[in-house]
Image 1: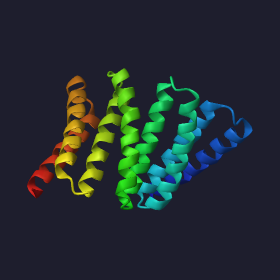
Image 2: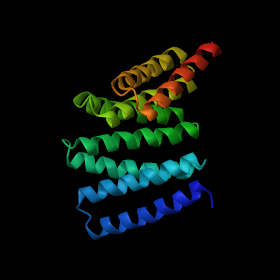
Image 3: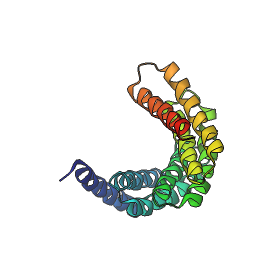
Length: 193
């Protein structure tokens, strides 16, 4: 069994446990948030394994649940971020499947949510990384539509967020890799012009 398959098995078991918990108490929004997160983790696993259709189905379920939780408590930043992130992750599957217009629509919604959260808490690394990721996904979807200048603008915004984080946290290993990847993508786009 591959690492991805082993992880998927655990994610599926976790999802079943979360479904049972929500079935026992469907009014508990915290449990529903955990269910949305379980769908997201399984969707991400499926997407990284190449099952983009399976990922899309799970991520759509995550988005529906995350939206419900976010609507119940609009002041809950964690719920808002989870909803925005679920939209971003769903768009990733749409991009992989060639559904670029759907991806861009979701990404604009996601960016509105994540940007508001990131601006309200600029010291929160996870929110800032989510913002950088949303910008980069918008760049990817935009380049697929053939608008290189707009795609470059989105990627520059992603780079700016990552550079700011990297300056604040110079020893953060994940930030170094994300920053290098973003710079590399910009360089590749420059070579392609």
